[in-house]
Length: 263
Image (cartoon, rainbow, N blue to C red):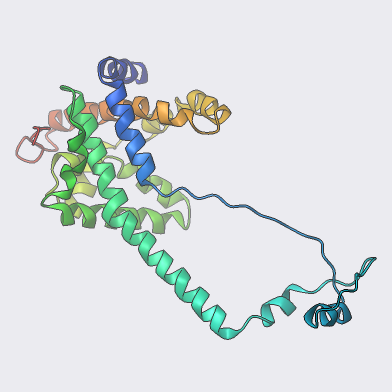
């Protein structure tokens, strides 16, 4: 039976000799992600139709005082249809590229990261472990991770099923890190079996990092870079504990989960 304190203690022991290597890997993964920010600027300009006519014809007159505002619909209706068409195509292309990036890069990299942290439990893992996921059977990893993520996303539309499935399939990335040939059905089944009776405890384990997360907020998120190795090492310890439980309950065996032999 695992406890939060035991998992965290084991994670600290692992990181005692490999923290900066783990930090560098987490930093690379962060840089590989797409960060977005938005700047919103508002103005309270109010223009009459006569003054718009003056601006259009290059009038140098300056207006003063409050005047009626131009409605949003006037602005929208004034945009040519071709502009809307180009904007729609750009949005669709952006969505497709975003989904492709997630399916072929982000989700597989998470599997590679998990393998790195599992190998690192035994001895300092090389950075190249991260990219071993792109070898054969890379496309199987893409398929399994995408289908599982899609199911969770669809369940999230009505909230509760999405949360439930997210914890049911919590171990799928770790299972693929150990056995990238595992089918979608088997990965989901075995993960659900491993997480049976463990969902709430896993939630509380994640919640136990809330204090560190709040401190990260004070550093405008930069502290998260230093917390990530600790969090990932702890989750690797969780997988190790639930993996041992699965073996003890005969849910799997060494022919399916052969360990994290370095390759």
